[in-house]
Image 1 (tube, helix red, strand yellow):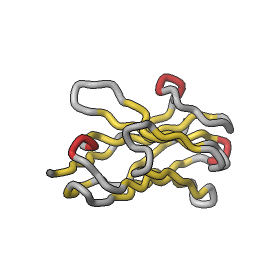
Image 2 (tube, rainbow, N blue to C red):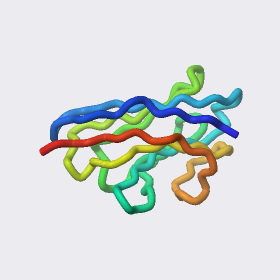
Image 3 (cartoon, rainbow, N blue to C red):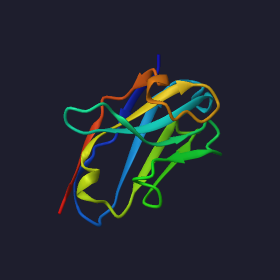
Image 4 (spheres, rainbow, N blue to C red):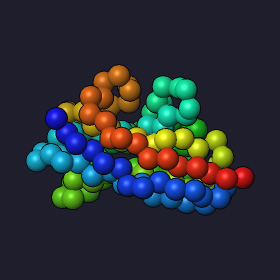
Length: 124
């Protein structure tokens, strides 16, 4: 079982930036694929970005491509989501998730360890 904790989100104006981090309590963090998801009210979480265990492969949803960047520091057991040019449509609860395995995982149902989530609100 991997425990995940996201950093605090917040309220940002449209066009602004925010960086989220997610700390994992696990000894072999580099052996876990990580994903960032967001959940709008009343909806299931959608994948935003994903990163392989080594950090060498990344995936972005079309809606955030070119604006969001995910990275990881395996020495610190932490994955990051840098969000730039934020839009009101980016407002959601953001969650990080982990799945044991080295490859890139982009399917929500394959993740079996989830953080509690953090609210990001983008005002127009």
